[in-house]
Length: 195
Image (tube, rainbow, N blue to C red; front, side, top):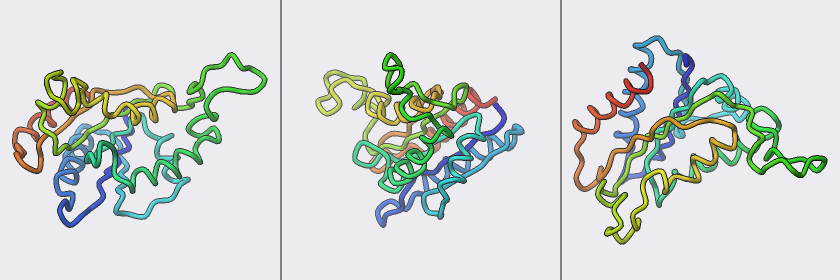
């Protein structure tokens, strides 16, 4: 991998200006550039162009999505981004529709991706504490993990034929932040996947 496209999906609110996601984005860019990777960055606070964003995905060997978790998913502005960029990319640039054709009904749904060989990584910030995941005694997530919660996001990238790198998460960032520990874990995570 040599080309990495970084997306900061944070949508700024009065109670959450996005400093943590911006810091994690900056850390990733610094790490990648110091190791000779070419990088591109799109943030939801900036204007973006559909064709340019499709080309960024095609250019990249890996996409790194940095996002807060808002109401169990990505912020609305990144959902809008996906609705436009990913839908227009179904013309063969990101995928050939859903992979099926009327002439060949044996093809499976979701097999039209044209970005095979490319990777993606999710880096997420949660208000939820880490102990609320992967523990059947926790009533809210009922034993499910972060990747279970973000399965639809994984499917979006899988729709394009991409493969996942290990997900990274910061937990309890509003009520019990452990920023220095999170930053150290993130440095280790980046080093593991982007040496």
